[in-house]
Image (tube, rainbow, N blue to C red; front, side, top):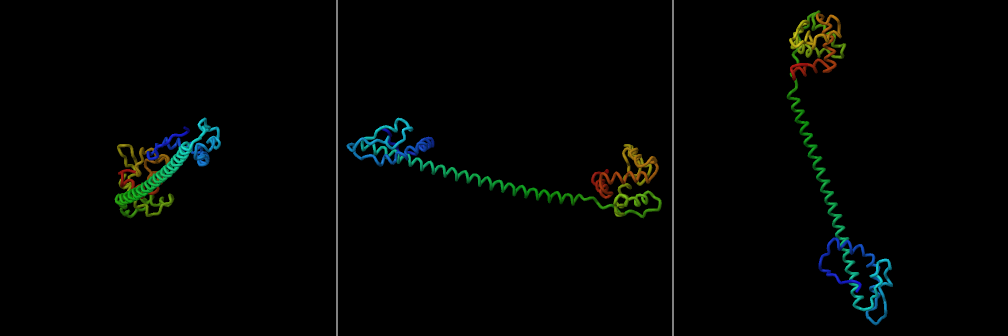
Length: 245
């Protein structure tokens, strides 16, 4: 007998579905032959091989001569068609599950992005609040500057560095803390002069009389402040926060 009956009530495995689906072309080609076979054994020597390609194996050339054989052949075709339908249903279900997983992953990624944005905004607000609380105290108002004093020299030099006169209050507070505006102020660590250059010999770049001349020391100190802090108030803020500049 060419084919055996299957138990259609038993759910086939995926391997069975795959094998049967692979042979669905043969079954489809044979379906025409099956329905055309004569119903009785006396109706002639009709064969399934007349309808099936010879390349499908020796079984394809087996002669079906009886009515029961034709019925078995039809049952085989129906069984294969059912397997193909089940395979298509399972493929569609797999596609739906994959789409659902992809949609869930996309939702999770969007939720994570929103949560990260909220955390970043909260952190930025916290930092801004901390910065506002840690803002340095404003420099005290500078006392009147006497003519010819170191303070008067410094005030007259501010414009040359692009700073308004309002920056002098920060400068006065800064250097009053550092040296008391004393040209010969010396520190055990080697800092020297009004701006407390460390070491003091750095001020030689502003003039050879750096040890005694206020203008030379101030010129060097203003250049140092501009290069590192941008302005006297910037240097003062750093000094307030750290105790040095």
